[in-house]
Image (tube, rainbow, N blue to C red):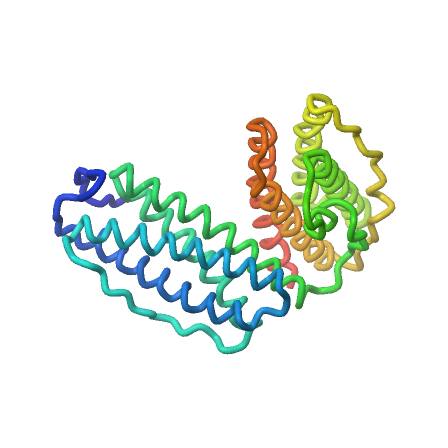
Length: 303
């Protein structure tokens, strides 16, 4: 059975006072969560191991400040009162534990915000929490990326730093032809990597399905090369693939690869792009998030 909040009219500058306890309680919980994240990410940024990580954590913190302000405004309009924020969970004192804490918290928050959006019948509340959930999912990807860079099982990749996603992530600036080239290289690399796993370990459904999906990614990118008169790079991805030592290592390498792929598209989407390219990059990023979840489940099964 699905339960919904009462449907009250939402005005641009105020919301009629209500006593919908369930909705108000959930929004207060969201405010507390954002308040805690703002403090925690300030702490993590001071302990970050590199300037890149520090800058990214501070960027994530800015998102949390925006969420806090948006949720507080909704709370005031619902209740006529200023919310009192409380930090419920203590942020770990050690950087690695803090990043892991942040990753798990962001994952849980995605589900919580989507639940609020699904139960609310008010379009403004729905949209606010859906956008916030999308932000939290991106944050989770970044924190997982920081985790994997430090504690991942040895993987099957020997990808150079100037090719595919790693090339894009290492670049200090990017042109449109470079973005398309790095993107196509990385999709070819995924195809070669997953083909190698299937040849080595047999028909593993997750890899078979995602290998086909990566082919669709390639087909989505190719028309953009023609439209924007960019030379299609030669597919040399097979030369960068090393056979994994086990199914577990294959899943681990695939998790890392999808994290890099998502981060690459996130970096591209921070630029001002033509609408068609932005749409394709967004679709491929979202698909890779689904691939990441599938590989994470596979890795968990093979621990």
